[in-house]
Image (cartoon, rainbow, N blue to C red; front, side):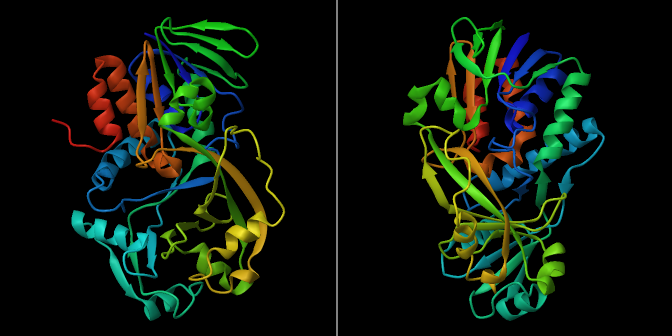
Length: 368
């Protein structure tokens, strides 16, 4: 079957990978380069972890994601996964860090509970007296996005797929499975799969009732010299507790120390707009992390990277079918860790037309 995949982020690349493995003829269209630093999955790294609130379904689904990543590493001949574990820091009863810990408890997944003073001794970048406890899981870490994208694009080309960079899609004819590029060129296929992130709303504006695009940013920092080594060996900090909705990825894969917060996002009608960081934006993000990070004001901003994501109201994947076109959109950075698994689920749908099963897989719902 001839299939066009629109979008060269992790979902599109993984879908193309899985389809090629099954013998389909694939053309992948990416509006920028691969990897595209402006895409939702175009930054240096993303977190993979098992911790989710109890009952979400995603904690158990991570097992399938890990297996899919292992198969991808096997095909690429290299792993781009820094398996360094993750840390949760709880500052208030019922904060997100505690909900994640309760999710681990509900699933019977192991972790080490650290009293606050023990956590500060082990991780001196934490501020004494600013949090209740921490817990450490040895499972999880950082995925190196740009290396993954570059190697997947090379693998696809070597397997005969067409990877077209700088190919912006202007229109999709869902009934006829035809794509029109911004240069006027028309491409025909049997099926179309759209994994275009925030740009999906440019192609299908009616989806704004399901999806909201946000402009966000993360900051890269240079810590005080005497804390550098503790960060170099630290786990990923999945949540810093309280209301910050903050995560931290230590130096990994050639990239520096990264802070990101879910508080720092604004709705956008144009994912290409506002992509240059504003003056003081990095310091604003950095300062959200005090507490529980000690001496935050001494951390030097080295870079600010903007991002564009789609969000759903319930923070689960969105999927929809229109004619011969399937649309799949992840929610925030939440989707990256499931990339290869999502690619396989989409391929299953292409081969079976079982959309109900695909929706349940994407939403981590029980399958009959």
